[in-house]
Image (cartoon, rainbow, N blue to C red; front, side):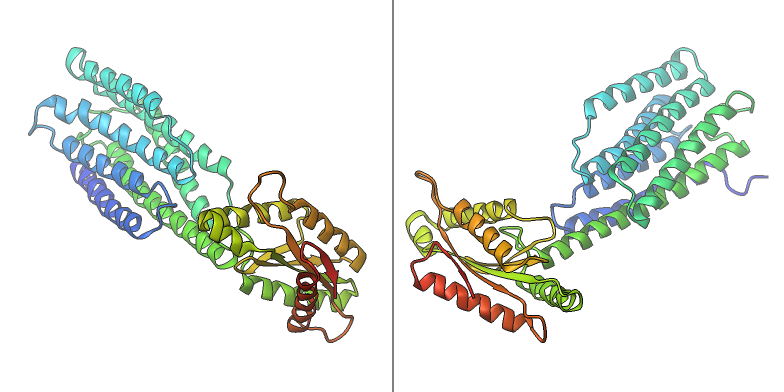
Length: 378
């Protein structure tokens, strides 16, 4: 005797999918627009809900509404989950290609429902397509990189569903299938119940992945200047303390450069603040091209920047500063500014961020007072 019949299991799938669709939709409303895919996941789950309700209504509605249409909605909803994941990772889905495949399978199920009735043939068509969709979905996430529990959970659930579909496909060749999806065979109940749990777990994985993305964006906002993508003042203070401690421990020199764009206010007054923003972005880009991966560039406010050069003696720091100064000289009709740079080096003992910054500021002040567009060591 079955503990739960297929109709009840289908209703369970629909209820879980509807609940998680509401959760994902609520997250879409509250999360920043940069986190894509939440709306597509929610829509896909609702499509599965409609398909499940129609399938469970067999015997109460016309056969086409309880066979071909639910099969199409189920397959399209499963594809929608994959398309949502693609959106989440910034990849444009190949919707028309998958729509064509789904329509072809749906037409096949329609033929085996009305033209040459065969529930087994319909089941094989739909199950094979679902297995392919889930396998492609899992492989897509794996290719994006596996870096956290949320991704492992999501991939694991999708692989599990794909395997379930393959097993279900195999059983059609040696187990009795009955006449409809509502036939009370044990494998139907098992597969439907497994699918319902998997949908719930996938939704949990999707919510966790979105949460990880939100945390990463918040961390980025806390460490990166939103305009120039350079480091923030707070992060630079922490990094300088770490590098100073390493410098004192290893005896390796630490160079600090203070950089200030000359006559930057003139750019804003003459060309507007948008032009001034572009100058700042281009300046940061030019400086980054002159640096090593371990060098740290931060924006201290307005047009003033700080640069940390670990393991760099004074003569090498002056060469870097000169390269930066030369790279920032406007060419032709280019809208830009020259840059004045103050350079200093950490002292072997008892140096601090404040002292280092004060010496670099003093050198920068001297560069400004002696004509700008120059490098001064303090």
